[in-house]
Image (cartoon, rainbow over all chains, first blue to last red; front, side, top):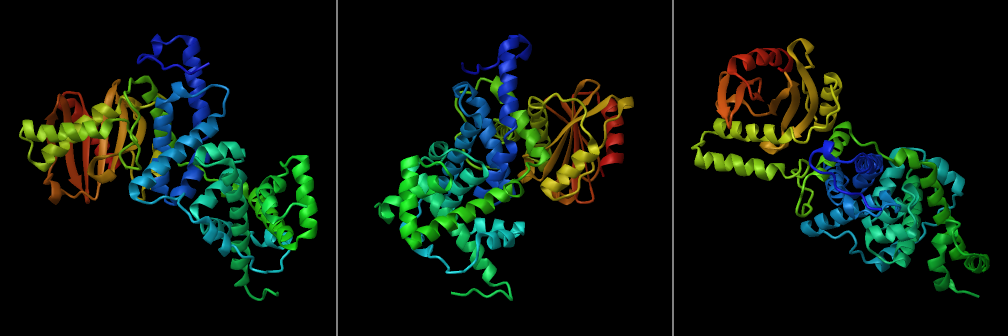
Length: 198
Length: 259
């Protein structure tokens, strides 16, 4: 079943279609924190993030009739958000997906820091550290990792949002996570008295 | 046995616990023998665990004003719109179809009605914005003025006094939003007054000398009565469809509570 457009006068709408509209609207709006958080990661500016989220809702409400009920509304909204973001970037002359992954892979050489996962976990205690490490990862990788580990989307859903093959999604998640690990350990190296040993 | 290149695409599902049993066995066998891949898997798992552990803290909370604006946009579903907005992070996308119409009318007004004075042009723009914005106000009843003021300061970085609802004056605060005039440095407070729309605009950083609004001015635009004044580096406007004498009574109340 598909959500139908409501006539201009809401009183003219039947109770069932009105109810569907309400359900669609309220479910869509329930994802605003996720959309906003993701938009912040993409744009890194609160004002741009707000504009991006607002644009996403504007498009979503107008295209509500195209949403297939029973599919994942959150994923649908995220797809609109990323499409909008890509259009904007293209317009700006910047393309976050245009990344030479080979070069980056070479850069993701392990720091050779002997730290246990527990140590890293414990030391990534400050929000700021983790946020900074996350923000230092190239956009394409950060997006994939964020959508997977923070927003918990399936690989196929992420592939749809980012408009890339599912294999690429997985390899970006993999590399992105290792880059994050690298940044987290690297940033800790500067904290005395702990000195990395090889 | 699978080599490193075979294993690489399986690594993320492996770490996520979503690999097929056969793939899982294949990765297990490989990393047992291959130290670099074993380390890569461990790194990936650690990063994943850090993110999962701190997921809630990484998430953000959308500002209240954004929530309201997005909720108000659900009204756009009801409107027959030919095509979605072409996109763009423009500051001007958040009231559907509003700015273009507003500017067009204000500019057209300046040409056709001889509104070449900046005050006249601004008055025209605000009058159009006033009519337009009320089409998108969600009917949620009264809004708390203190909270709205705090949200405004948080979202926009400048303090705003929001006159509260006044039952004895039949004045009800419905919403506070950013207006698109003067590069978005304008607060638009929307009220229901005696059952009809009333707008209060505050233009931050638009002092009198730029606009030449030295005293209170009355402007009649498109049938809307408008009273404007400047004080302390800000310009204020109250817009409603009403008799001037009646509007002046409300303006007194607004002036006491907004400046």
